[in-house]
View 1 (cartoon, protein in one colour):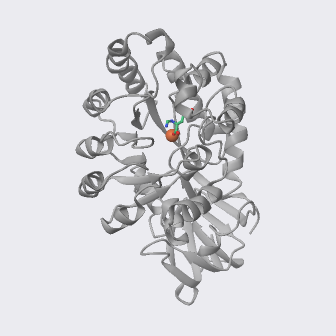
View 2: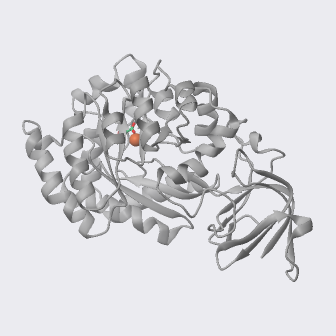
View 3: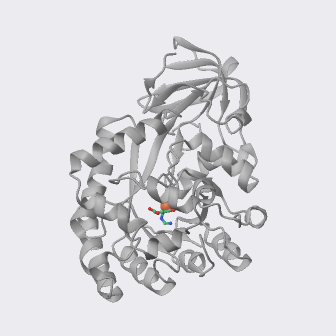
Length: 397
Ligand code: NIG
Ligand code: FE
């Protein structure tokens, strides 16, 4: 397939824009990309009506598979009860854990597919999905299995993370060390053995796990050959990001309260900063992540929905991009890099996120004049078509 008459935002060096581009796709990969005038001969051209091509979008941080609803907590928070207060009273993550434990794989898959469809309608071709709403071995494995299987039902690549250290389960309420033992000696090894997780995540926070507890989980992850990432510095500055950087983490996520020492640490380790403006928005937080310092330090910035029932029921990656601009001060270019090249980096994926020869042919085509148009509107979907693994899976060319 030779695509012609398109503008290509290759995302190599800024937008890496090619005004009048052509893309040759062979065997699910990009075989050639460049100015149309230089396209290799002998291929029948498919015109794209001047549309904008970007890499398929990558949502690098979601909690897509869960049971139940937390709409009542949204209402509670609007009357002034805080996220932490709700969590301490047995709501929050624990409430989703109860609902998720009681659901079958089929029920979890059915609700996850509806949420996934909302993301796919905006050009997402790769999604990361975390566990963390089961906490016990069987439910964590159930969530990860459902997450992996979603790619059998939809044209999307799923990357999974085991987030056992998300909250203390009720059965371990008086026994933190016991729960960490369970993670480190039973669940994590079982998850790794079944090849259900591509990485290990944790929630390092006053209402969740300490830096030392998190490090213990990371040490086991590394001994099993799994990369790590961390929910860090979301509500306070515990120094989790610094520890994660020392462990060579792929990413640190949220990081509203990250200080300069933390910025320097993740800059040194090449860790990606994943910004999650949806959670910031829903929790009506006041402290934005240190974007200027991150930029100055050359830290790659990614942007994700953090799709979850509690703090970020955001089912739109374009909205997350817009929020990253309006709430955190990213440029539209940074926002688009945040859901393409830098999102791929955050997942440790080297075969996507840019349009270049040899890369996976995951391409989104947009009814847009300029790549900056993607982060600009709210609630207006510019997507025209999607190519996944070289196949047209949405829209027509
Ligand atoms: O990314 N921060 C921790 N975990 C999720 C929220 C989970 C929940 O409240 O259900 C997050 O914001
Ligand atoms: Fe999250």
